[in-house]
Length: 477
Picture 1 (cartoon, one colour):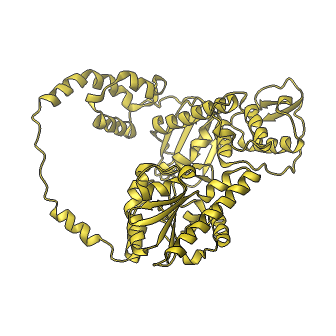
Picture 2: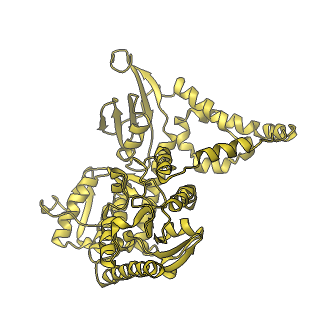
Picture 3: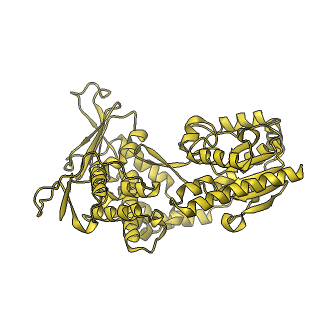
């Protein structure tokens, strides 16, 4: 029996180091006992593990799941994650797609609980202003303190959110499982704390929260059961607006009745001529003008560094449309420069298509992601987001005037066809309104396949699709 001892709480770094050693030794999960640093061990000292063990290559979703689940309180979390990693190492790289698998199902529940806990801390943590005259650096002693009681070890995981949201303030967050302190320059992670006395007194922050809550309260949608489910009573003691809730609920019926009895105001008719004329004036006359509009527009989902514009010559015979920029594309501002783009370049060369002679772009122009520590994990755009960017894409293709549009993946096919497309069933020629089209897989799909003959065949099929697309252009020319 091997014993691995980690720090109390969410010891992600310690788990990763131990995991590398265990995988290097080929340790069976059934022969490993995990414990937190605060718990006494029944198995003596922890067994030494190799210090120079190499990293374990894991699919991104597995890595993201590990970062989440280590924050859970379940004492079996490390053993469950070790078991998951062992199965991935043995070839089950798509294990998270098997939702009925008991191990995957249990880890998904832990992940869901942690994400819900993070949401609750983001939503229900409230700062109170305190003043310390002895601290002259903090704007005359101005400082903010918050108390919160999370269900899991999520304090460090929430730090980036609060630093970004309250970067200009000096604040401290106290919880029973850890604390955070931000001085407008650096973040300090501290030990567990007790609830400080006097934190319930009224202040400007509390008054602001209460006024905001009252102004957004809709009496016609009062549902106490749903309110208690979304805002459990355990958080009410820390919420300034909670004091106003009983009165607003009691007054809701009268307010609704007054709204019903009030005379409805007839909608004011607006002449659309001016708005239509303004849109006509903004209609780009060239691809360069369109790109300036795209570059100046804010991302639909905040966070992207910049818009990633299409690349290639106007009049290109083939336009290749992907889903959206990835992390590397967002940083460099160019399409298809990351791992998927490199695989695409290789496939184009094998298919006899010069990348520089094709026009490459994406259906969505900004990178959408979820932060996991220092990493930014790709998130697929929603149908609404694809629709938001569709006008730009259609104008773009109108300026390029390709003879054939090749869509990579379902998102690009949705943007061009206006409907959901099953790529693996419908791959091949497809009409896209004014353009002749061809549907195939996205290179990122190939990168997610486990190494082996199946992945090799999928890549050969992809090259064959591109070669067939080239033949359609040459035959039409």
